[in-house]
Length: 174
Image (tube, rainbow, N blue to C red; front, side):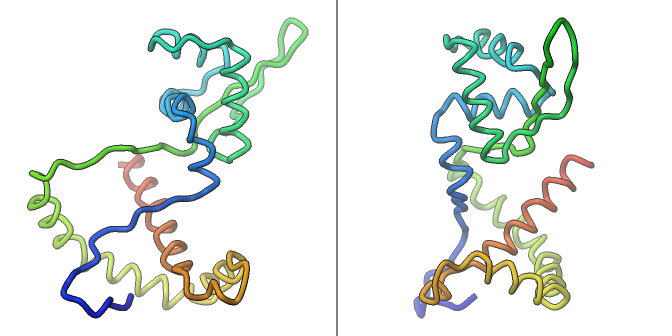
C-alpha cells in the first residue's frame, strides 16, 4: 500500500460490506445473529430467546428478520425436520457481527501483539499475492463497476476477506 506523503500512519481498516451492513442495520438482526451463532434454532426458538432478552416482537416479525439475514447470506438453513403436516427449518449463523471499541488503555498491548504477528502476516500476504495473484485479479475485475473504480482498494478488500475468514477458521478450530 502506498503512503499518503505525511508522517501519519494508517493503523486500521474498517470494513463495510453493503450486503452485510444493510442486513444488520436493524439492531434486532444483529441480536438474532448472536443467538444463531450459538446453536441451530427454529424461528420459534429464536423468538423465545429474544423474548427472554426483553425483545417483544411477533414470531412473524422474527421470521421476517431471519429471512432477511438468510437472503443476505449471513444465516443458513442447516436442517429440515418433517412432522405434523409441515417442515421445520433450523437456522444457524455463518457470520458473527462484532460491534465493539477497544479502550484507549489497550493501545500499547495491541501494538505489541501487532508487532509480534506482523512478520507472519507479511509472509501470508506475499504468499497470497505471489501464488494467487491471477485469482485476486479476477475477483477484483468482477467487483469493479467501472474503469474509474480501479483507484478503489478492491485488492485490499479481497486480501482482508481471505485473512478474516482464515482467522475465523483458525480461531474456532483451536
